[in-house]
Length: 339
Image 1 (cartoon, rainbow, N blue to C red):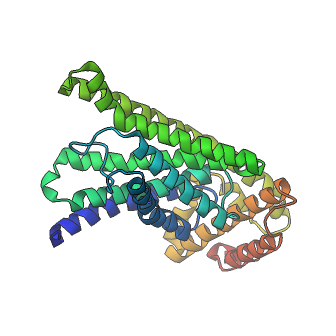
Image 2: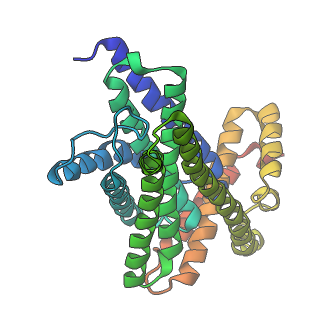
């Protein structure tokens, strides 16, 4: 039975990076922020359901019932582990997407959902590893655990990006795309986890130099992949900004969205400056109401966009009226409306 200090260390190394990832993912989601309940659900299911399913599958397939990090001492390369873990993350992601279909819009949402699930999986892996004893925790090991969590977030983001891209495809096309997304994430994980040991065996010289070089190569592939995700996110921001500008334009004419909101809703700097001014003049409550209004305006824009794209199987049209009523009520309560 682990001692309390070991359990505390395991919890900290699992929770602190995960909460940091959620904070970053919330910042990435600029224009139509996903509800915290969904992000927390993704993290929780990634930390509980996906690892449990992976452990069960590995035991059934005759593998040890544990989830050691790739750098764990004595670990032998096993391509099946990456395939099983990526499949479990993919299944959890599909289940969440189907349960919150109205909130799931595009590639950026897929990246955020998938990264949150992957971060949860990485947290579970770190927790179980540290639970084995803190004597193995050096500064390098702690850094490796943090990077391992980022890697799992990346693998999940890859699957999520594909699901977001396939959002409007025919069912069979979406199913094929999902399989390809899971397969890509599994390949990346298998390549990263097994390359150092494979190269050492191929060279017949499992020395530090060969191991370090191959590990750097494997890490480089993941970092290039993360850079690609960053580019995808930047392009998604531009696309989402265009959607907000197009879909909210007539809402200004109808008096739903104020001119001040419309002028700043797609400007990150403009939003920050406006919130800072409100904080100085009217306090935190006014800033919270403005943020809620921006969020509702983003939801209204994407709701209208979805209605046009998915006329046959789109969202409930009445939701648009509810969002308009919410925007009006928040605008009426704003100190800016009385000045």
